[in-house]
Length: 394
Image 1 (cartoon, rainbow, N blue to C red):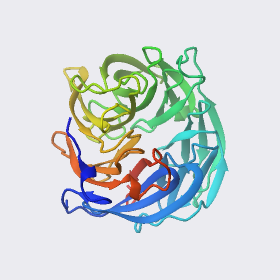
Image 2 (tube, rainbow, N blue to C red):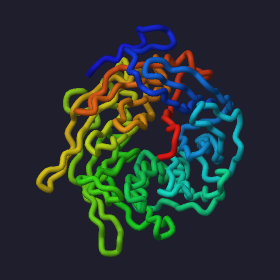
Image 3 (cartoon, rainbow, N blue to C red):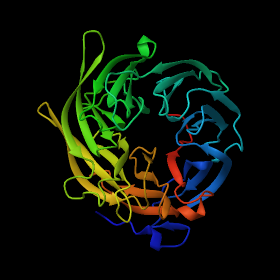
Image 4 (cartoon, one colour):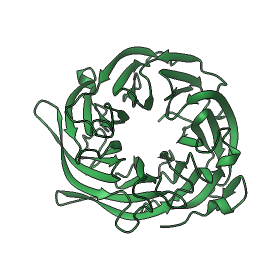
């Protein structure tokens, strides 16, 4: 595993070299804070800071021209902030706030962004919001309750940990950490659950995932789904078949350790896999391994291979996350997705930028912001979400 080593550099802002990139605007969520930064390929510069004691914006999503939606996983509120994607300036308080399910930890838009879905970890529901208004205001429509006969023995209820849209825009996968299942919602059937796939073994805890398409084409139905299981540190690949009634059937075809064959965690008891991100090339799959017991946690790279009708995922490499417990990461919005941004709530570096090699998908150290310079909370409550906001609508 490559050692990032960034904490040994300057005490606040550190970088490898100037990449000559266009300035990137980022939003960062942490306990009690929402922050915005500018990143020029070398240095992170703070732009705005919203301090909100007791709240936790662990997931955010943006809609042009200036609507930033933020969860508060510590309550049952969905907030709307004004955010200028050109300057990176953030309103100092919400411009709208609505009540939904408690403990929402994931947000996702419909393809036309007139609907916003929120996944509740606390009580296993998916909130459906109308976001069609020009001012970005939210109108609650309904919530969908996750059900199933199986319950993770370490959990007390179903838990909607992440909502993942398929490229066609019709289907949404809901990773149910509490129910060891993947539920499929159909937007053409009023966002009802049309199929549920049990994720084995019992207790594995499916957390985050992504759709994969063997032969990418605009609007194509995905051919596979990959899911990361938190409790057992597994990455699992499923084949997707569309049935005559338009439901999706998921069939498990492969399961691998999220650490790969050569880098087991120092402490398998505490280890808990976190984020999964699929690159636009539909080949590179990045996952975070948390609480591994090592000096820092890490990011693993797997690749999706599809030849002669057979699909598989292969472990390729691993690099330090630069901190501890990387909860979330996201790729930059440029065409090549040249940078991976990682959020570490604990450890030396809170926000880390990793340069991505477009040819092979490998990551290398680029820059970081030390946790102590950006967190106003006690140790363990640093950045847990990071996302680049594009200046223009795509």
